[in-house]
Length: 180
Image 1 (cartoon, rainbow, N blue to C red):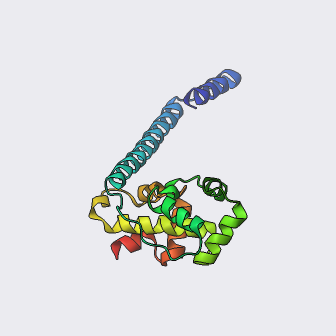
Image 2 (image 1 turned 90 degrees about the horizontal axis):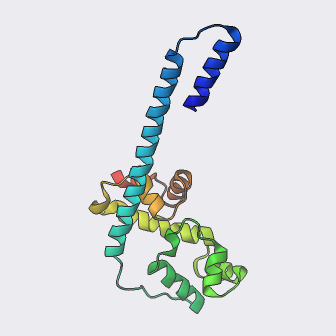
């Protein structure tokens, strides 16, 4: 971008025989470099936070599975996958992939979830993600991490989906929940 901007300035000078001061190029270059640095450091911190959160979660895996009052062994398997394997922490998790893992059809998976919880697949997965976020927000070990890194580590794929689903489930924003 800087080179392109420099070429445009030099082309203008060549075509119109009018010498523009290079202050425009240096100003643009400075702003671009500051933006690039800020963006890079922000993404690095976010990525580093997620890595550390993942490491903490691996150390503190729950040892027991709560019993499920369900008619369906497939639903028990799904609960096991969520509680032990934390499949809901995968941002690209889909109903297709879960159905394939359980060796059942998509529609049967939806039916099982609806019968046992009376909510749909995405709401069910998001409720588990939000429960994990709430647990982390209450734990002082996660105080140094940003709310967004915690949300992304719990499986949300964007800031918007994290905040929207959290507010929908709890009635509070993540910050309000943490402060409360």
